[in-house]
Length: 310
Image 1 (cartoon, rainbow, N blue to C red):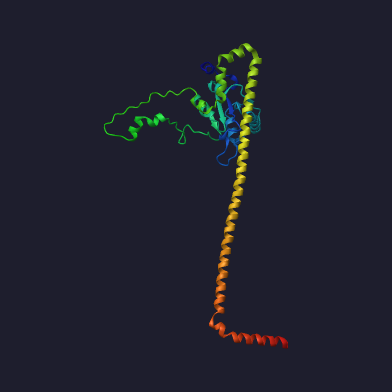
Image 2 (cartoon, one colour):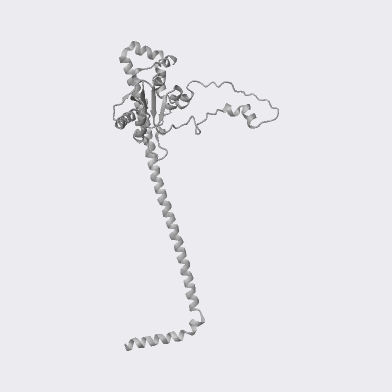
């Protein structure tokens, strides 16, 4: 690895260059937190043009697994900047080790955070998924930090208590986070190039063997990208079904509310009918109704005679 990193001399080809860092189509950091859209370079056209003016040339570094998106982004950048854009022919970590004046621009790639450690100028078009500086930064706290006696003596101070930390200088194993998340990206290629068997194959096997290795590597990456795309498509289908189900459930809920209102109106109507019938019964059973019964009969008799006369 040290041998691979020592090849950091400046390269005239990339002197005073801006390099756009590509990402995969399934990178969740490309999802806008504002509207849920997948972020693309065209959304940041003005920012890209402004950064481009600071450098003589511009290149595109595709993500090891971002085949189709890389081609789409290059066409999009060429349309924005109205110039041809070439792909970088070196890996991301080789770029960091170059002594050239190189600027790195990306939508949300975490690679730009690493680039700062190599004194590279960086331009975020959006934001990284995980902040490592500023008030929103994520802090890595291990169990040893919480279980340390010195931590608790500071939190719960006691009189005349002498406490020493049981922690020594933290010995983080190489590539701990890469192993934890199984995410190697361009670093995997750098490690492979540092292996003796790789150098032997390229040196003694000739260009054909090197080409076969690259072809096999690309084929493997394409298969992985296909699996990721298939998984993403399944996720989108599941989300669509879930949305449809939510809509149906919402309609059922509204129908239930309407049925409840109809039932309430029906009960109120029934109660009103019962009340009206009670009033009618009280009227029929009243003394005044019985006393005026002869008058009502006489009135009906007069009405019949009147109809016969007319």
